[in-house]
Image (cartoon, rainbow, N blue to C red; front, side):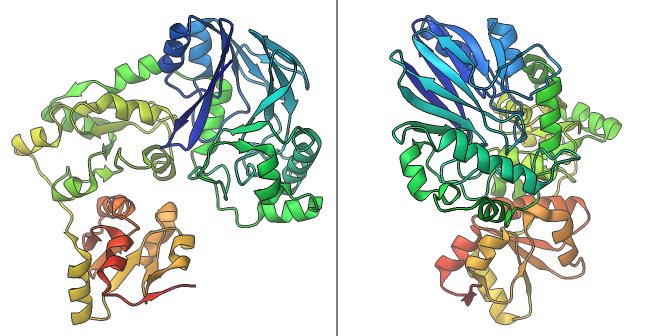
Length: 464
């Protein structure tokens, strides 16, 4: 028996490859399927099933392409109703894979079709539970992503309480919990950085599994403090339920190399969004006017999803040379399939062609301190999450989270310099680039963000 967790940090997502006696399953695969095919080939195994725990909201699964490429059957739990061929399993139905058995445990709550898969060894012993978004390490799935007209968030939270108490908590404490997400995912609010644990340990440490918790206590605590989900979530659910273009077609379309002249003409003709994925400070020194920065070396896909509301938005790419396919693939992971091509030769080709450029002023924390000492009334904006701001922040600073940029921009004025910082310098550059494209010309980025500000020991800090 072989169990492999395939964790993708950008999405805080765990897919799984399990193999036994020449047969394998993949659980909640990512959009790019070749790694799973390669694993099975290396093991001289055939992928028999693709198990889906639910219709994912935060990423596009590779279930359809993987099934077509391997002949595997797609398995969903009860109440799923996909628009493509799939096996809709019954509660407690069993599937044999080599010497292993997977038992379906229908666990509605996060969504009504949410299902866990209990792995049993050749002797019938329970070994592991693949919980999807039903149970995380330190948390449970949010109950506000799959509302029906007759179901409230409270109703779904109540279903989740029953699923945990009736289906999961009675299992052996020794089994390993393998969730679909970890810290950083928007599918929960209190997930641990750990990506697996035993059920017994979770009963001791996970607030949602307290033995003395009433259903109402659970509903109150699970629904308290939930921030609105990213706008792209329901659009990803639709793709996972209805189907999508082949990843190969998406990559082929998005990796067309465009000369500076063709790139510019395409942008003018289509109105495509110009997305620059280079390093934040390199972007600041020179970029194509009206392009926005979301760096590939950060939480790229979630920020794309949070800031580009339409997954059908046409996109033109400015990337580091050699990373074009990586960028297109990572966009496709969250359903952004309409990249039209990339700037051949990168930004240097644009510069060398003599075309118009823009830049963003970026200063150090020490320079910011000098400016503030000369004028205590300068406006500093902290674009971190409110929870980060509450923990510690510069005295008299404005909190305008990047997560809610359309509301946050209302706190920014155009007629005076505004100094923007986040925690480390990534989000502040995203924020500044978006607002600059909207006509805000007096924004100044603070290099290194709050970490550099705190390390400078030149600012009065407060907390809430």
